[in-house]
Structure formats: C-alpha cells, structure tokens
Amino acid sequence: MKKVQCLLICLSVSCTPAAYAKALSEINTETINSVPVESVAPLASDDNSFLPLLGDMARAHGYDLPEPFGINVNYMNMRQNIDVDSIRFSGLGWPGYAFPSDLFNIQASHTRERSITKTIKLDTWLFPFMNIYALVGKTRGSSHSTVSVDASPANGFIGPVIHAMNESGALKNLDFSLRFHGTTYGVGTVLAGGYGNWYGLMDINYTRTDFNILDGHTDAFTLTPRVGYRFTTPGVDSLSLPSGKLGVWVGTMYQDVQQTFRGKLSDLNIPASFGGLMALADQNGNGRFEVKQHLHSPWNLLVGANYEITRNVNITTEVGFAERNSVLVSAEYRF
Image (cartoon, rainbow, N blue to C red; front, side, top):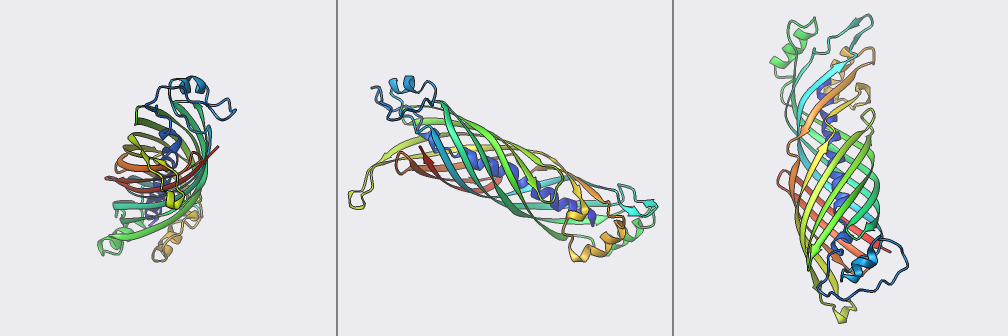
C-alpha cells in the first residue's frame, strides 16, 4: 500500500513543472513582433529606453521592434501520461524491528496526471533577437493511477499476508488519486529571427517547483522551437477597432523533468481502504518513499496564435496535442 502512495506522488510531481513552465514562457508575443518588415526605411523609435541593445541599428535596417518591457499573465491546463520505473520505501517497521526496503512490490499499469498552472511573467528585450524573462506562479493538480501491490511470501511474516491479499484480488488493479499544489518559479530566454512576415522562435527555460507532498523541489528544463507567419488584419471602423497583427505558428515542445522524488509517507493522503495496512507497516512514523519515473513522451506538437490588439496589448492561445494535451491562454501588456 505504501508503494501505492509513492506512485501517486511521482505522478503529480512530474506533470506540473515541465509542462507548466514551458507553456508560460513560450508564448511571447514580443518575439512575434521582432521579425523584419518588408520596408527597408529606418523606423523611428518613440521611446527613450536604452533597450534593446542594438535596437537603433535594427530599426535602421527596417525592423519593427516591440516595446522593451512586458508583463504577462498565463493560464495553462495540461494532461499527460507518466511511466513509473520503481517505487521504494525505507524507515518502515516496529519499535526494535525494521522492515526490509524491498518488502513491497508495486506494479503500475497506467498513470495519468492533470495540472493547472497560473503564472505572472516579466520580460525584457535585451537584444532585438533575444528576450529574457522571469516567472512565478502557482500549480495545482491531481494524478490517477492503476496499481497492484504484492510481496514475496518468503519476506518476513508480513510478506505472506500481503501476498495473500494480492492473490485474493484485494490488492490488484487499485485506483489511486493524489492531489497536489506548489509554487513554481524560473527563468528563460527566447531567441527570435525572421524574414519578411516569416519568423522563428526558440524558447528555452528552467523552472523549479516546491510541492506540498515532496521533500525539496523538482526541476524542469523545457525547449520549444516554433515557426510562424504574421498577418496584418484590417480595422473595423464601426467598432472603432484599429488594424492589428495576427501571428500563427506550429512548433514542438521538449520537456526534461527531474525523475526521482522523495518524501515522507506521513505527508500523503492514504486512501481509507489502506489505512490499516499503512498503520501496521509504519508504526514508527519514519516511513519514507522514493519514486523513479519518466514522462511517457518528452515531445508533443503545438499550434498557436497571437493577436496584437494594440502596440501595448496582445493575447495568445496555444494548443498542444499528440503525446501531451495542453491549452494555454495568455494576456500581455508591453511598455
């Protein structure tokens, strides 16, 4: 049963950090505007900011640069599969007697997690081709898995009891759910370039998340290349709506999430059906878990769009599919 708890934990941890971090930072409307315009006449700058560096040179070559600073509010909803490699326990036993760490054997057949992340991102264009940013936010979610718990009949005097429960079906194909929440923060950069209305973006970020059910933190590295095209949309006089800019793109996302998670068994919400077994095996209250896992697939596909309502305000949406399902909605103000 303890292994069951661990399994749930790992699910929750792996889902949030990577998925969430990426989505928040990737959709930089600013980058979309950093592509060169068709005109080669120098463009005047209407602000006194010294950023981006080399900005005057870029404008002299006909590039239309966005405002140098931005604040971005993001909402990300993500679902993905997780493969659990191993679950181990330590510190179990009774006063004067320690249970072996390999007492329990857990098999996880399917693990699915869902997370929602809300973040605020601050960014600036350091160069016309390079944006840097920092983000902070909250993540909450849940994981669901199907597991079976067993033990070797030759492993002490508790092993036969666990094995008998498994053989009877009491510890097979069990449904377990785990809820989690935490604080995520990170940094990243976006490299941008383009020709005419075509543009390319490369978003690279690193995030760290502190979860309520784990010791320490989890780390995630995300890499997202995109290729897109920008259109100019006509204004609507009857609605007093000025002309705008619409960018559409396709891309892919790669996530590398910390794969080993550790914590205290006492911090987990154990299902009532396993309360007795847990109390029996962890009478000292020193039980700990270690879960090793990996994302079912580190890659997925992306399709997105950004609409620049005015030079200072824009909105973005992006959908991820294939091996990972995600929806991102973002609003940005630049100044």
